[in-house]
Image 1: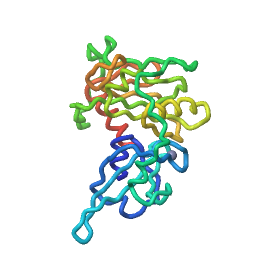
Image 2: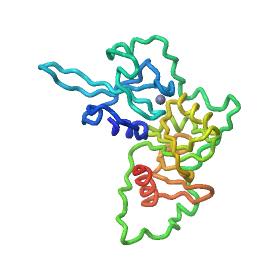
Image 3: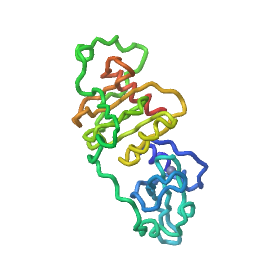
Length: 240
Ligand SMILES: [Zn+2]
């Protein structure tokens, strides 16, 4: 279950959970009508089939990617799964593309990928160290993984529409409240880091929503990296 949450939202769920939550074979189901009992964020259901006396039933876990944590049906005051989907008062989801320029938010375009500076095109990186295994570089997923250190950062809507794996890591602190709200409204999963992190972006989607090779962009004016360097950055991101 935690694995599904990690793959889908890039969040590590805090426990403790019922033992069944750590069994295999969970899969994503849908967004449900109930809201997170902790933060009022959106809840999504994950389900896992099991058999009892010849019949197949399904366990339910409810995940709040914003907290991030998981709940049982009882935690949100439901007795059956159907009660979750029968709630009519669910706010309409914010459609992609309706934002982001309004409401006084400063829109910062995502830098690169796609337009590599000359240094990347000309391969002026140091050679990959001989004693290091070259990471697997093929990357077919449309990735947008960002460590954000600017409260005014907003991903472009074309980028969100194209990326099928979006992960955002941002600092805690009230100056990021507006950004967190924006991300929730746009169904963008994020996690809050308690540690200082440098800005970084690893992805295969450029700022106009086109696909690129895997590129990693570091903080400031650092030269974007491609090839094994970008793959290493991707793998490091996954390991965190
Ligand atoms: Zn929550």
